[in-house]
Image (cartoon, rainbow, N blue to C red; front, side, top):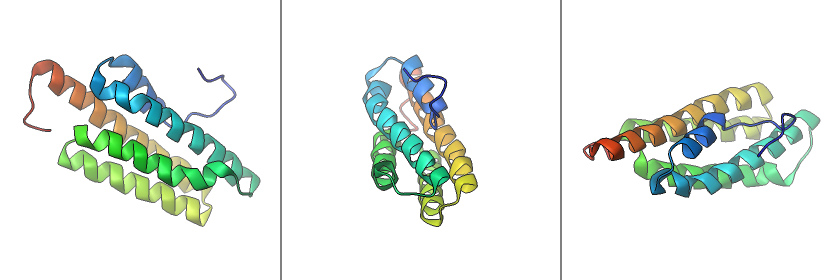
Length: 130
């Protein structure tokens, strides 16, 4: 559990995986927490204008989370996830904190939406979108 002092970059994704206790989303939980932790460390490095291990780990952690989420996503959501992930990586390279934060909003929303829809399809038995 995070304290109120620690930033959270994937609040929708983390709440979605906690709210949908099934194997589809449970497998994503640890990956999402690692990505969120790397993002917080990276954010601190961006604000301080320095390097930190999270800054170098974040692209890998985002790819792991994307890989865990995209099998459950529709084709359209896969594109949104990849586009938002790329935007985060570009903001990190450019050291653009504002774009970094905005890109995370889109990434978080895309991943959470894909997971929630996959859960809804699983509950209704609709596998045509997977």
